[in-house]
Image 1 (cartoon, rainbow, N blue to C red):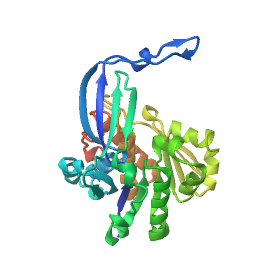
Image 2: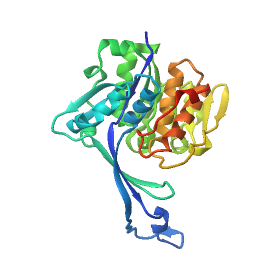
Image 3: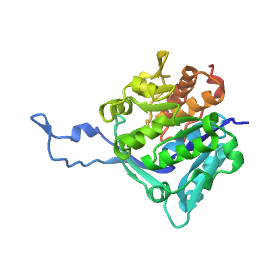
Image 4: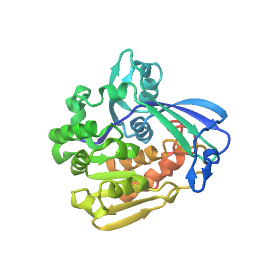
Amino acid sequence: MSNKALIVGSVVYDVIFAIHGNIKNELHIKEGEIQKISMMFTAKNKERYFGGTAGNIAYGLGLLGGNPILHGVVGDDFLHDYKDHLEKHNVELRLKVQKGAYTSTFYGISDEEYQQIGIFQPNVYYDFIENLKLEDTLKENDFNSIKYAIFSPGNGESTRNHMVELRNKLGKDVSIIFDPSQVLSILYKPDILKECLSHSDIFIGNDTEVNQLKTLFGYSIKDLLDLGLSYIIETRGADGSVVFSKDGEINVDAVKPTKVVETTGAGDAFRSGLLYGLLNNKTVEESCKIGAYMGARNVEEYGGQLYKINKKDLKF
């Protein structure tokens, strides 16, 4: 019986520097133009967290009891701590572990207004992801258990290849969610983007990424629906989310957190709730409400994998 989600994407160590002050205040603007940039910050602290889009989504879905299947590539440093952490939280690991290599690392500077400057160091991820097939790590019973699959940041070629492989294997028995995130404008050529969209049932992105589909690639919401997508989900942070379909649009409110500590991984937590709802035959609107709940819990803690939940709060 197909009742699990396959999560494909990055598994990353997040190194976050929380700094004093405001990044914007360090920008020197003269006559409406940004002048030469030379920034210096002092850090309150430096922390290392478990992260990566796929890792964060898997963690959240594991908290909910979804037993996700996680596919990707990591270095053998992953075995020291990250592996046990994910398995402890009900994640089924189907990862290529490359000996003598390092897992991807994200370095972030986060200011007092939760603005962030980041550098992503792919390490082993970009060395192998284009050539790594799903069948290299997934077994036959894994494929047969997949009901939904989400493809989160990889490069365009790897995402396209994995989508095609999964479609050829499962056909319409699997629903595919396309989640290119912040690399949409950088790593997707128009022809590959169209292929990925054509193989997808749901596109999810924030307001910037949905706008990029239109301004950079010429896709309106109507164009996306005409390609065969059933839903486009646009996340808007504290302003909630919007679900577009042929039946119109539905606005879903955000859930207010008890406090905001740090926003890293909030969108990934939303996706874990969305998947949980869909796996349990909830409507897309109901699933987005679960996603909103997960996003709120996420921002109450540092990093993307320290928050906890109470499933009794889920009244959907």
